[in-house]
Image (cartoon, rainbow, N blue to C red; front, top):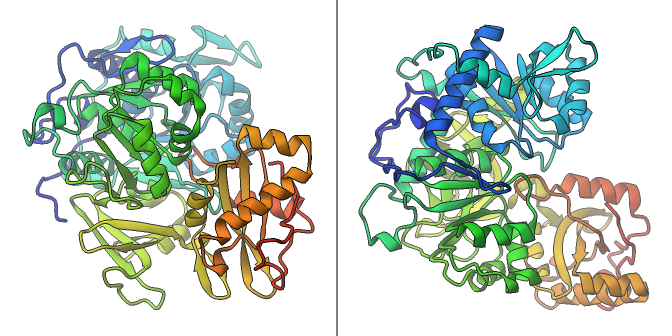
Amino acid sequence: MPSDRDVPSNLSVPSFLLDNFCHATRPERIAGTPCLIDDATGEKVFMEELRARTQYLASAITVNWNFSMFVVSIPDFSTTLSDFPPCVWATHRLGGIVATLSPSLSVGELEHHLKISRPSLLFVHSECFTIALQAASKLLLPLSKIVVLDGPTSVFMASPLQLCQSFDSLIGQGSLLPPAIEKPFKEGEAKTRIAFLAPSSGTTGVQKAVAISHFNVISIVIQAATFNRIGEDYTRWEDRRFRPGDICCGFLPLYHIYGLVYNLHFMLYAGMTLVLAPKFHFESFLKSIERYRMTHLTIVPPQAVLLCKHPAVQNCSLSSVRYCIVAAAPLSASLTRGLLKALPNVMHLGQGYGMTETCGTVSMFPLSQNVGTLGSGGQLLPGTVAKVVKEDGTLAQVGDVGELYVQGGQVALGYYGDEKATRETFVDGWLRTGDQVFFKENGDIYIVERIKELIKVKGLQVAPAELEGHLLMHRSIADAAVIGVPDEYAGELPMAFVVLQPAAAALVEHDPKNAIKLQSSIYKHVASAKSKHKWLSGGILFTDVIPRNASGKILRRILRDTKTRNIVGSQSSSSTSQDPSVDISPVSAKL
């Protein structure tokens, strides 16, 4: 789908977003419409304040550190969310790179990321300070290059001679300084200048830092705006998918690509308001939808499950919601139907597909489908080219399954500091996604599974997502994940980790015999609907939680490690594994 709009290649992200860059897809923000609302306090932040705070911070950084080329690491923090955008855009104004980080990283994990990015400056929240200080000290990053986001004017630490600057003090200082001058990009320079180092999903291995250019961010915003006909008078105002003044939830973490680009940059570009919340708590989420009359939900599958199954939904009005997109992991058809019931006035509901390496998006459900095709990841965005390559290296035809390769302005530059991984994934101008997909004639894309996550049973492929979607239809199951476990005869067998609904969990806790009955019920639930090679012959294990990353993707590597460490005596005998009446590994795994 070739794009009919030019994407500027001489702009930085803040010059594109903050400086009123005029583009056919950009609507005019309605006067008096805030950009951000703090969910906890109700405080409103307007575009003028975002511009000013970005300018003040850039001026203060220039005076205090006088960096030339530099990297700033910014963990997404819990109580100062409205300060996150100025930190990002001030860094970009000065030609720097922003490495986004999770605030929940351990010392070792943070050290891993800091070794990749080698930051010149580190912004931290006081809650993360101890861990940040330990990790920074291992890289010899001094206290003078750490900025505390919610601290007093000066925060004395290990030595009174060494102190950290505070964000507020820098803003105050910068307000008295002349504006920092942003050096304009030359034509084409935005394509090579890195804007973000974003953490990869980490579902199958150690996280890498994806190098995302300014052009990537600008391109994906314009691609999504073009796809959704933002700025066009294509139908009645009340029927348009995106309208200036609409209100979107902001519960996705800003360090992750979904929250960073689609929620923050795209929604602000569309003239909408983003309600930022420090942490996701489902019942608080429901109350916020009511309180702010949210029109747009950007969620991940675990939140979709809660909307479909949590009893608190019955006590809340979700009538304001007109649009809901689910991304980051496949959504089953049954959950889509459940969302249609949970959101009575939703006019636009569907899925999107993408990854950090595509700046968040490859496809989403089109305007021609008020409800996206069940099970589909939508259709390619304008300016995106795709091919499907079969296992033997030949091109797939419509309906054939193979690995998805993509090209487009949203495709990242590579993995920062990792040439080997870059060569393996970014091949001859194509991004190898590692996802098995197929297309239908109308252009809908269907994500089968990540290649590394497919289970091979006697040579037959089993997609964990298919079984997980079916398991969620069982009345006793709140969440589920499926992995493959080694089997001498079959090669691998599917094993399910299951989180029970509270009532079912109480029964199991009261009498372990109920666990065996429930495992048998779950086994039959799958065996009665799926082919034999998809039966849960590797076992069914009850657990308290399914480990996921920030975007809701299941961290199967943790499940495999847990199975290896803790699960003994798991049934995998091929002689009995096809009989639904057998005892299915009555062991409870606690993650």
